[in-house]
Image 1 (spheres, rainbow, N blue to C red):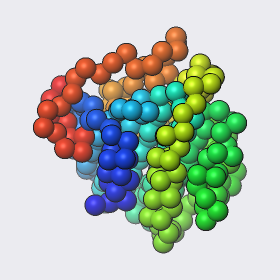
Image 2: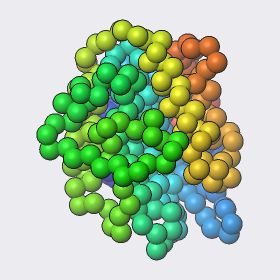
Image 3: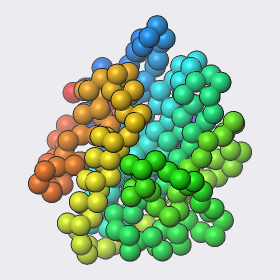
Length: 241
């Protein structure tokens, strides 16, 4: 199991997440881009305090991506869970970003407390589009090799996220939904790397897997409902549309 698959299994089990259907043509893809072959796997969930969770892995000799995004329903003080582990080329540095981004800045002390004193943030000069989205506890950096403690860091962040899920807070739900929408729009529309993602994976993948439109609606409403549920699927494996 990869690091991403480990935290995925932990979150699914601890939060009682249910698989959401992804079209088979999007859940497992083989993509040829500029003469290079890429394999893509995607899984999605929801349930309990989680409005939408997705886990995406891209693998090729020249590009490796492990990505997770878990968006809360905003009826709790649960933050937004984000993981990016990317190597954009054979000789390129690894880019790592781990964060629990608050839906209200008043939650920052609670997030830091849940992460614990052994968590050491590092986010030097983030890109302009990300400055308002990262928490004070974010861990972001470039590395010649993956940090030796990356598995420990991901486990610590996952435990903190699960712990924060049980701390109910229904105050300012509208403001929390708006912050969640801003987060989604910033990552979907302003992140430079999304231009490459759109060319590589296509607009349909962005709209149906990465950022379904209801996550950043014009009128603030929660998920209109995913009535399609796979039967017999494991760990989010799509079995139909």
